[in-house]
Length: 130
Length: 134
Image (tube, rainbow over all chains, first blue to last red):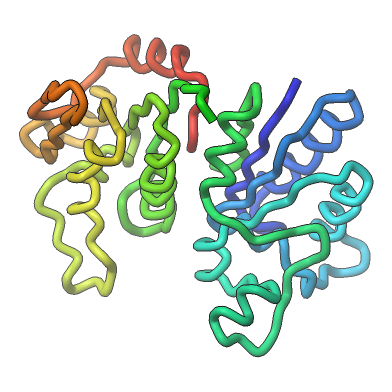
């Protein structure tokens, strides 16, 4: 089955991001295709490489990065949500005159159209959040 | 992309207090460009998103109610409101905005696409939807 995954909550604050990760990982291991993981609302905070959790805790951001590398996953942060919350890649830094970037590897920033497209192209859109 | 799917946008949050309602509205506006078959479902505190007469002038928040009134122009064909949610909050259809819809090709017009539906209809409409955004 071809799946699209949407993550609506930030890491550590809310279980949604953990559930989304475990769901995505399990689906890929079972041989399903994940067309895209789209991060919206505070979900975009899953994509900052500056996250530093305590050493005895899971590293949610690195977990996504590793999954992305292993399966060539498309990890997309919504641009409008990212701008509000200070998630920046090279392009955004250039456009908005910011002095730093913080996006994690494997993630990219793009528009809401990517969410709509993923919903159309996939057999299921699976949303994680309240 | 020629495929047309039945989209439902499910709004369950109050319009202010969290950003969910505003950012969910942004999805509907962007989604309009994809020409899908679109309905909106308001339930729980989401019914407050359609209450008319809101005034945000002293809260430093952008009032996005005028945008809701234009959703008919953004490809939204039905705006459903869950009856139980509405009644539990002491509201009636008179408290809600009216949203007009027009098909510019066929010139079909509907004065108000805001419609109250009961729990059985909510379940049926959700089951019929191919994609539910929440």
